[in-house]
Length: 527
Image (cartoon, rainbow, N blue to C red; front, side):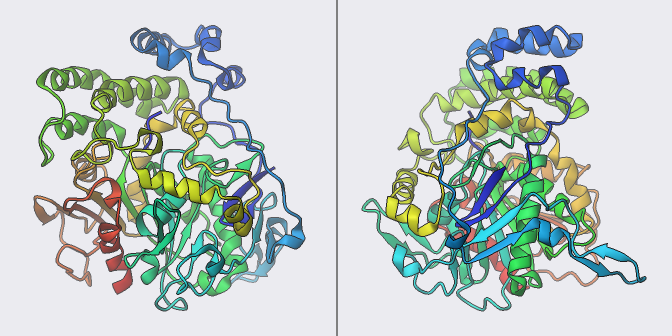
């Protein structure tokens, strides 16, 4: 989580997205103004309810800079579209959309559901040796790595980084991909890579993140989910050898928003070629109302590490929490952009800013932020420098002129369209009726800490599903009797919802050398 016609790239694979979708609950008369600096919204505030208007005025008075100085319009990246002859495979959504089959009762139906006609998938295979990438990767499509083990039978995993607006290539090179980048821009083999036992897709999304680009913009999780569903559908259409294998979605941070919605979008389509079996969320932001209550305990010595803040700052956060939670609850109740935006701004400034001002790493309470321009990690700068080399951009088939690890325009777009505080955790009980959900957390992260993740998974609204098992740093217990046939894997079994909060001594999402992340994949490899 980072405070602050279209194309999606799966490395060199691209999908043309439909026009930007309307943001839920955004008043029509405010749609134009929302793309301008927020002081232009003053006239539109006059049309709001008294409660919504008072929220904006309250937060504007407390944090005027946050409300007045941010433009939320995202300009498209400079790019050069490559001709069709450049690509090894092209799948057009309109062609897939036009395929009809005979159903079980003799009726005609589309082979796969969904609105795909405005999407294309373009794929180019690249020799990994030309990039200095792990030579054991048999079939390398930039962004897609076949399993080193048994690609014909091992599961396929989609990996998503958060932000919102941060590239999943961060996860590739800093966490769970086959290679890492050093200060000399040399790549090194990662023995802990997830593709040791799974084929992994690293996806830059939403559009205009990483190597992806668009003439329009996606500014909410629901719209992003429709793009991802279309892209995966075309991917598995082009590569049917993977379509029958188990498919899992995994990610961290703001992916705690993405993953429940993306999984729900996939499962909503009766006719689909995506064999979704489970989802995994690491140090995610999923339920703001619950999780924001645990910033103060984590920062003030109650999360297993010494306090970062002094007593005065801790009291200030205690005093701000009731108002923060009341604002988030109003967002949950209305799901209105006009209510959710003030909640995000107030809570981020009141509950996150005191910690950020200390200079401590928000992803690892044990140390200082060593490089503020690269999310506190110098290695992220090495990765960005590597991916901005002209020869790498050319080899990957990217159509943009440069790579950014995070697009902060996208980050602001999501914030100022109210997405940050939307109650996407409400999707989880529905998922639990169909697939297992794994929640895991490194114990040194502040910004999406294990205390908050443990708390929201224990909420009765989530924990009502049969067979839920909650495992945490304080031990494990069954909420209800496990369903018949469920194995006991001594803390690694997925009942329905499983919280694993004891990746000891690991920061955000078990970041860094991916030893912690590799443990998370073990249950998938065993199934």
